[in-house]
Length: 479
Image (cartoon, rainbow, N blue to C red; front, side, top):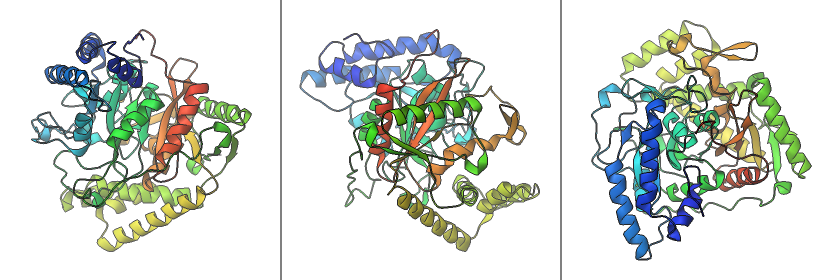
């Protein structure tokens, strides 16, 4: 077996297991790749090469002694905001740029316990709050498919590093598409897990909040294949620290093993905002191909009003994103948004200054939405949709309120990016983003499969079957 930068993580582990390559050789191969390419991409600004080499030497010794830990000897990366001892964890916020935690968070601990060798941490935007990876601390990350375009965000460095063959696995986080948008823009794979499948704590600096308060925010895997997604997912799943006393996760197997057995719902465009013509054409091509495989495919959606659902998502997102801000700052932001009169700005403003009663009512509506999804998935197995409105957009430097997206002949507000990310987020459903092919100018078109809560293995299996028979990752030209 020949191992190169674009071998799957599964193939790399098999080669390690059969002593066809040592962990140190594999780590050094990736370090050389980073040193060669990252000057133009700036995907992995935090380097831990000495640490990776030391871990690789230990992994080689452990393998020689018969150890079979699931990631033993494999190099990989973490998003910069992931809590890992002695490494920067700023989340792109200058006030935190010198912060070095003393302990590993639960996700990093799981990865290290599984034997992975950490190459470094990947770039992010300020406060993880952008679909770009432009950092005042680390600089801008470029998309290897086109350096003039963003790799997405906020796990943008991770998406770019995977596409360029600088890492086989990445851990990211997602509250607004931050795992899945970079996967879509970089032509790789990303899984937003069910909300309670993977510990949430440790995904943001100094956010020492118990699990129940962190609604919608999750941590999860990115990879160059759907099989590798499940490999890392299996390492990451488990309870929050403190809940492991009496809590054990036992996720069900995938509902089906053959495409012909899946019932696939095509999500109508949220609030009638269609993705680009080329994105829609690719989605329709997949739907037609699935039908020829015997898959039942039809347009369908859960029984709730998508506009109300989206407004409630904006309310909860605003509340979660500003939980540590002083009341005066939140009220000032709410007042600014209310001046626009836009109904979605008004919903976001509600989240900045809602009282306890309004918050409890919002959580109650969220639970009703979760029930609607549960009812929906009695008749359907997965929902198929675009992951983004279009291919990766060109770098944008204007203030967020002055940014726009051009989709075919439409000019849309920047926050329209949320429309295809949020259906899975608000109610905590799993969603697997996958490589769906290339546009006419050779840029990745990303799609997603949304599934039933805690049935992550169903979307993962569905995407694995598509990957096997329809389309799989291909490297960017020149890489």
